Structures are given as structure tokens and as C-alpha cells.
Length: 347
Image (tube, rainbow, N blue to C red):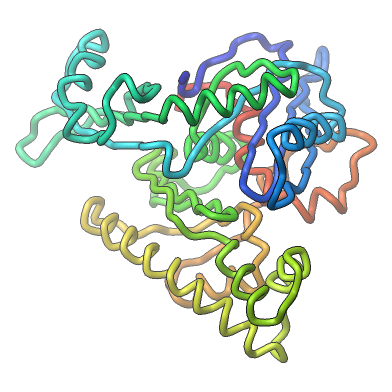
């Protein structure tokens, strides 16, 4: 696993591939010759619930074809229960000492043995503790080997070469810092709400301060609507994004599930308030489930924090031939893929 590998070749066209539980998203940022402008293209393919390994490989190929992507080198990311991210405070030391120090601390933070995972780390920043001693804050990432091997096998079957593997939270940060220009004085939160998991990331002064993968997503709402109204899956997916106040039962289902998300968010916000003695200033939501009916209003009202659906492609020039209407519909889904395609610097 290579966390945030720096790529310096300005002629290189980078491709990000984000495989979720509901869809495959691909994005590429093409640099134009003799110009600082970049053009953006993307593709999205829905994954059927019963899709086989071979079907997923074909869907990756189709998404790349839709985006007019011909390169075979791609950047990918992972998240969920097979990936562990730990934020560790250590005394200041030389970088060559850091890996050994993490090995010594391993059992305190990671439940799996080192030979069961692929792991990497990143120095985030240095600060002083309460006693005034300098300390390093380090992100340690470990992913199960069999999970990574299976993901790599899928890309090999698609005829692709994986350049590096990131984690969703870091890809989100890269997209946000590359495209957005918010006031960085106060912490902001990124919520990438997927089918089964929600990536929660807090940025402080543009740097990752905290992240979690919450076991909540749009699947719970879709399944409840399927059961309640005897719909097929795609009908329920459409309904949860296009409700009106006449569908009281459906609104109740949506808000009941969102209450569980609210509980998790409040726990994280309370923790951050204790640790940082600061409030999150703004929440940006992305992911396929960011399209949920009145989600921005619901979160903003209950958290008392401004919430905005985030379009990570707003500053990018769309490649000719691609539909602006389609981009508007799918832009929040593309945050991770865009972050992978924009990988250009160490956070």
C-alpha cells in the first residue's frame, strides 16, 4: 500500500477508480499541452446486487470506455471494515526511526498481526502536548491482505495496472484541498455517504485531523422502502431521493435511519469539541446517498451546522462530448474518484 504517492510527471494523465457497493466511478484529469488547464471526464456504472466477479471486471472496462480513458494505469482506494486507520501520537523522532516505533506500538492499535495486513503510515504534523513536549501525529493504515489481493485480482482481470492504493478518506481530502478554497481557520467536516458506509473526515487548517468509517449508508433506507412498499431495488433508490411531503410513511423511514447517522455524528462532534476545543464550521456531503431527499436541511437543522452538498468537479472543465446534465446529477458521487485522479502532493 502506497499512501498518497507523489507523481511529478506533468504529462501524465491520472485515473482514479472508486469501486463502491452500488456503483463503479472513474475519473480522469487530463492536462492539456502548453496549458495549465485540465479537462475532466468521468464514467459511472451501476453494480447489480448479484454481480459476479467477471461482471464487475466488465463494468470497470465499460466505465473507463464511457470516460474515454485508454490508459491502463489507475489509482484506487479502499475503506470499510477491512481497513483500519489509527491516529497515533509519538515523541518526535527521525523518520527512519518511525517505522520501528510503529512496529513496537502495533498491538496497542491494530488487532491483526502484521503478516496479515499490508500497512503504511504518514506523518501528519507535529505539535506540543499539555506539558509542552513536542510530539508527532502519525496516521497508521492497515488493510487485510486477502482483501487487497482480491481487489488487485479484479483490476488485473480488467486489464489494468494499479499504480497505488489509497484510502477513501485521504482521497476525499485531496479532492477537497485541490478544488475547494474554504476558510481554513475553523475545522470542517467531509461526509461521503455511500451504500453501506459513510466516510467521515475532519480537516483542520487543511490537514486531516480525524476520520472514521461509519457502518451506515443508503442501503438501510433502500431496504426499508423495498420492504414497506414492495418495490424493486431501483424503484426504492429513486423514491428515497424524490420524496414529497405526501409520502409520510416513506419520510418516516428515511428520518428513522438518518437518526442513527445523527447519533454517530454527534458522538464525533462531541469528541472533536473536547479534543480541539473548536466547533466544526461547515459540513460538505458527497457520495451516492448525498442525493437523499432533503438531506442537507435535515442534517443542518439537527446539528445546527451549515451543510452543503458538495460538487467536487465544479472547478474542472468537462471534456467535450460528455453531458453537463449527467455531471450535475452524479457530481457528488465522484468525490473519491476525483481525489484519486488529482493525487499530486503529500497532504
